[in-house]
Structure formats: structure tokens, C-alpha cells
Image 1: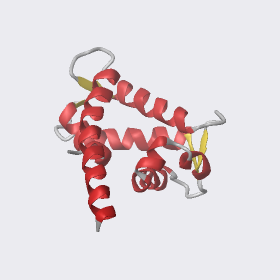
Image 2: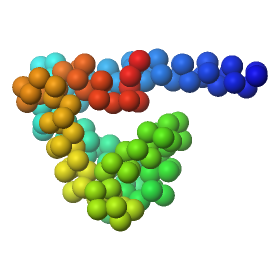
Image 3: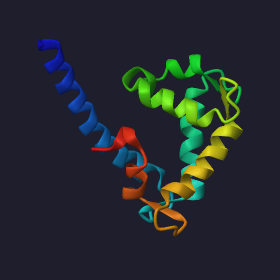
Image 4: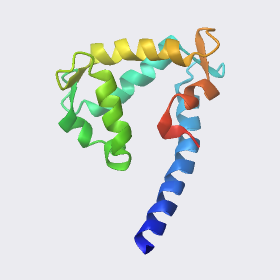
Length: 132
């Protein structure tokens, strides 16, 4: 019972911190500081994330590489979901091209009002790891 309470408290802290962290990421990625992410800024953010996961810089992320990331250690279900979603051809490797293809599709889906840019709300609402 004690372990369950500690785990719940830790998870609550991580969720609250992630909401604040998500806001910081959004602001940092908003290169032109207009309060929105356009498609170029969104893809740049996705590419940076991909490059951090691509430990050997071969433009491919294996599940083994992904498993060494902070995200995989803190939120393994989110990391696994990202991998499964982005492995378009299901060959157990996510290439940069696959990730770009999926990021482009996700941008269109996340852009609720179809104005060609993402508000902080649209972006955070689409990222389960940043929901509060």
C-alpha cells in the first residue's frame, strides 16, 4: 500500500511538471515568437526530438535506441506508442523520412481550426505526455 501511495504521488508530480515543461518546449520551438507553431517550426521540433533518439546518427531509430532515452525511462508507454505510430512500414525501425511523414500528417490532424498553425492549446492537447 505504501509503495502505491508513493508511486501515485510521483506520477502526479511528473504530470504537473510535464504540463509546465510542455509550455516551455512550445515557447522554445516558436521561432518567430508569434504564439503559434507553423508547419516548419513543428517539423523542426520533431526532427530535433528524432535526432536525440538517433544515438548513432544514421537517420534511423531502433527500439533499442529509443529504450535508452529519458522519455522511455520515465514514460515507457508514451515512447512505445510513438515508435509504433511512426514505424510506418512496420520494419521495427523508424526512419527520419517516416517520422517526417507522420509529423506532417499529425500537424494537419492537430490543427483543429485548420488555420495552418498550432496554438499552444492545440499542441499540448495532442501530446498525452504534456496533458495536465
